[in-house]
Image (cartoon, rainbow, N blue to C red; front, side, top):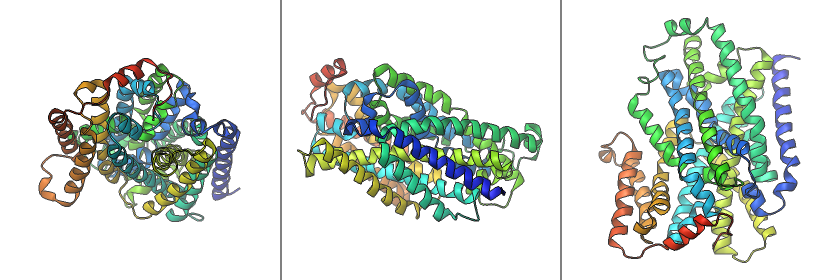
Length: 480
């Protein structure tokens, strides 16, 4: 069997196994819509852990980090470490509180404690951000398949193949297939990239030789390549995202109990910390070995220099990292539509069976929409950072609602979300407003001032009694 034949075989086997897992858990997902979107709130600590690692360590955290490290060096690895720090903060703070509230989506929290227009604005922002992140998984997936089998895939046909797998797995088994397939994905991913790093480092002559031949003086520096301000910004953005993005919160809501949610996020965050630096080291080695290639192809190109079986399994596992991220994002975007738009505004009395059908159709249509986005996007991490800053409004609202409910006004949520959109639009189109290092700082200042200012002026307080009661009754059914 030739090199290409080996890689085609590995990818086909991998796709077959992923679909096999999805079919195996299909009966669990089919039990009810809650089973499909939240795994019936029965996820264990290991499943929560692999779900958050699978969501975070996708294309941006591997291919994207290596792409940036190719240009600036080892410090690019802080991007994935920032994800880990965000997950640990989520586990130590609000994962427990989210699980206690027994909600299904973030906009449901907005409607329950604020008003319907906050919910509508919340749905729009959450869906948009998740579609942007998801479209980046298609870009990375296409790059991996094109590098793995250049005779068979172009980046575009690689994206199309990725789309079929992302959408198919999510359609079949929902949260159950996303979490169970992540056990395989995350295990293979970590083994694959660690073995690849060890072999490539040996091939390059060891870490000392790599350091001597580094393309620039910042290549092996943990801070100065991207700079301390960028590192702090990534950490601020990703803590913000971890406490407010629907896809992440949906994982904590699927936990079997409060402690499971908490432990799963903390362990998952710790597991994430080193992997970005491994990907970054490979990006630096790629810059030494292949100084004239496109940075996006740095990691796939380097891995392809290994034994065909090892290269095939490693790239398949990196591609699987994309699958795991995309499945969670796609499911949560579909849940936002079916639970917060269709059920609220179009068919409030629909049966659970119809609710399930609507959610699955949403998975299909939103998957195709993001494929359209993917064909127009470039620059993985920079695109991601701007979109993620919109989550600041949700972080402010959620933290105030959970920790200082008696100081919250029912009017504050809507205007805080509106302010976050205005800040992002102004930042993108009016260069004069860019007085801070990154839009995330402007978002935090404006959103915090808006929320606190409106809460101070308006006397319409949220129902704090309900919050306190729900925190006590963990298993209480959600209120609508």
